[in-house]
Image (cartoon, rainbow, N blue to C red):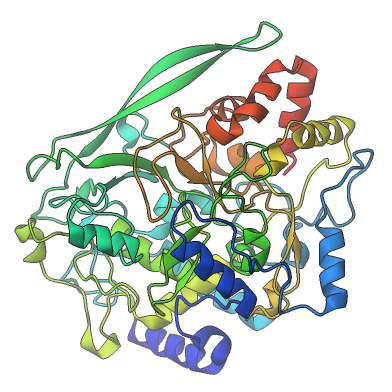
Length: 532
């Protein structure tokens, strides 16, 4: 392992500035940074600032005109759009559809980068072990944790699944948080130094597993009730409504103010492309006060970057609470596996001061390898891997029912939140993500999805009713890759139809129009989603 880490260090030095930039930072244009600051200082109900960035500083006027034209929503549903097949740009995977469809590298990375990707994949799959052990460089698991490897939650680099009997909670966990109550807590949230306040005993998420000699914190329990929903043509669909609780709490009761928010692990594809969408283009979709009166009030989640300390745009996570892939990886290492990184030097993971037995356990830091259990070279590789998981190519995009479903997707207003396409920044640090036309079908903003989907948990500027619009690319391969059809943030939906019918709040009008459509039109819309 020492030889492996030495090679990783040499690789990191050789890669130069593109991967040695300050971890966690997001490159913003000057105009976009002004917009972000205006949103942030205006609070969660910000007025659209007067200096709202309408253009991007990474583009010439000619390129800006091209981008505006190519990303304009189509009005022609008689045939596929140009480049629509390659929904992940030049990096789109054209390989055979199978269980590994989400595990392919970007098609446009170099031969050398392909080797880097494979090293990152190995670390993504690596099982960490409790300290002390003979492996040393794999030490540091937990002491409290949800899984031993990244891949064990991101199954085949795809989405997770809710608990199913003896299968446990792998790939879904409970976030624990409450709203600020003291003046100090309120100031921390207002200043974006805190996203919310964790439970005083159990921390920011429930860890159901522990190293030998320690008890896991508790066990998630999900109880479902069935609710019948009638559609316009008389069809009846059964939706399952979940209720969450924690059994077998090992360290006393939860704080009565603590809320439980289930989080299913999302697919990993296309993350590097999302990271390079210009902030100005995302903010162009925001309408915090619904000034156009269409019932859609997308809002950005402005967060403080963990490394630079600057305010920036959150774009990852179910509530858009994280600004960069590197920070997302560091948060997962700390919270899910209990592994410290330079970005999150938490050697005991999510253990709190109240969990004294946990803090008394040995950590896995090896001084000769660096001050963290997963040192910087490991983070470099895991980040590169996460940035370069390719989006699969579209399928059947010219089929008549797929085109009919696409038309309905537009007509009933789904594209108001699921924005079809963007062109990434021309000055992206890696050429593989630079100036790519991509089709994520998301605006990456927060939307109030109504009481049915509410978790009651605020995260930064996201309220307990709000969720980030999830990208739809790859959604049609869920069953192929993961062997199931569980959707939404907690996997309650067992089909795409159920997922649509759960939409409320800002999605209510589109949901109702879908429910009122005849069966053939509904089937066509599902066929369109399955082609993504």
